[in-house]
Image (spheres, rainbow, N blue to C red):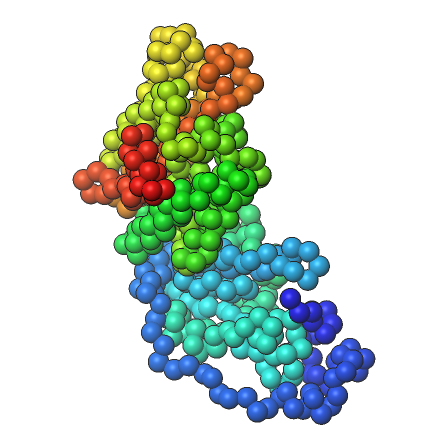
Length: 485
Ligand SMILES: [Mn+2]
């Protein structure tokens, strides 16, 4: 990649070029600076269609407005984060901002200002680069370097929200009076402007509301989650087709193959892909993905494509690298499958959130007792939680804009809550026998199995969004054979 003429800050970018070019931009003559100011076509776009979710984001802002009458609400998208020197991590807008606007650009801020019975929304964005003052080509944030942005007028058409210049927002917030809340953790500059007007407790209430608002997905969100899962299904198929190349290289070949699908069809992967072959499957968040892939081992692949609107899938399959489960692998796999079936059956409107976890844990515990790995009775094992040496984690979580969605929701609305149509969650039981676990017979050691699907609660039960991938062991083998054939 090319290097800027000189490093500089946003403040400098706003200074007139005449003041900056003396010594700052060696090689920039007055004549070149003058030339760069003009001779550019007007590319303003007119009559843009609103983004598909504009009606949904408007309804979400209405609900937010109703919860905090008379208060100014500030929801930042966040800023770029430095990776090293002058390189930055790919930007991902805050989920709160994405949920309420559909806009995903860095430095954006949504402000709901009290007006009448409700609020007036404004989306604050960086406008198009100025060509007169040289910002366009002399600043690292200029459009010549980073690409064309939407003008504020274009943004208004796309998002259905009046737009204003974000560079004026901090001063406006400093001068504003009346109660205000901000979603913390994304934009230090905006928070600094509000520092003597907000309290941590009141800001937390805003964050919690926006997390709980996302518990029940609207029709647009359910559609996006299905898209994310459909791309993920294709990514898993891609991986099965190249298992021989992974055997010749490493788990990285699997990671790269899935990532290609995610980038071509979506925005990104929704979280670091877990490509765990052999005993690595027992490391729950194995993302180093630098181990060998061997015939005879299982491959635990836990991965999800994130759509362009930032909704992610979260799917796991545990596949025999050579296409056929061994006897002990099949025994463990089928037990996890049975537990997952029990878990999925417990996902329905009116059920407690904990029910699917309890159902799956019971099946796994019955198997562990039956195999003689832990002494029964089952009720005692469950009461003491002894099965958790091998089941390790919870059986699922909410899914949406975050892979572990709605994380700020209160216990009473989430973990102790009741399932409602529109909720989307994963059901993902597993059994893990660590390679160094001396309490189990040797044949179990180094084997980890998890099966994870994305389940949408419907009016009369549930829909498995990831049913496009087989789960039963014989169906997995047949599916793998068909792809490799
Ligand atoms: Mn998961």
